[in-house]
Amino acid sequence: MTILIANKVGHKFGGLSAVTDFNLNLHYGELMGIIGPNGAGKTTVFNLITGVYQASEGSMRFKGIEIVGKRPNQIAALRIGRTFQNIRLFRELSVLDNVRIAHYAQANYGILEGLLHLGRYQKEEQRIINNSRYLLSIFKLEQVAGELAKNLPYGLQRRLEIARALAISPELLLLDEPAAGMNPHEIDQLMLLIQWIRQEFNLTILLIEHQMKLVMGICERIQVLDFGETLAVGTPDMIQNHSKVLEAYLGEVPGG
Image (cartoon, rainbow, N blue to C red; front, side):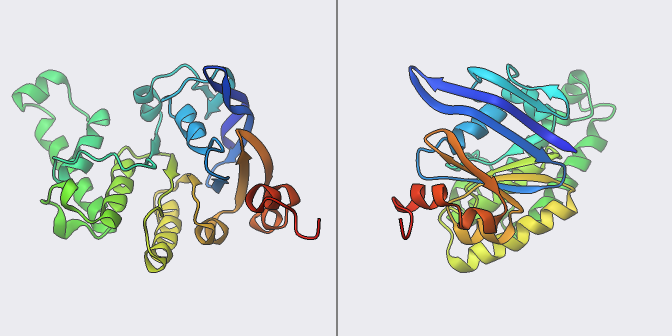
């Protein structure tokens, strides 16, 4: 069964086509990667899925619900979470508060209860704090819960952003270059972590990544973009030996 279907999706910036005739069938529980040279349209696809950009044409349906035309908060409420290529944390808030704040879109109390700290407020606040600390523990961030997010090393900021994305209890998690800036040892750890959170949280994961070791090591299928168009879709073995993919990355086909 498919959780996300994109059909002939296109997007233009002025007269320039950033994405053309994009199609995607993402299966429940799948871990799929999107790769391509710089400027291929990968992050544009994520922005279209999450409502940051609106598609110029085509359809995208998440669990049967059309999401083209919906705002980012509406799409997040459908339980689609994401991280960003350029880290977007609340830099002046604590590590704990960065995760806490993501819970409030689904807080189970009314405005009046929140203002007056009545009714379900106390119980729900405790649940949010407990769940936030649990997420921090998964990412080995519990010891820095009180630190300002801006003071964390780059690798820990990446982990915090993933923890915050999980706070909305997503069914689909979009990871935009999660290994950016990481050393080989950190990438190895990240590969294990991504596989673990998929199982632990019963997630479908779609990721963009330039680190081929990570993509080829954990993705079950890979879709390759170049200049906004899909070059190939297949297993890692198929993609590594695809002539058009080799040409896009290397400039020529070996032996050609």
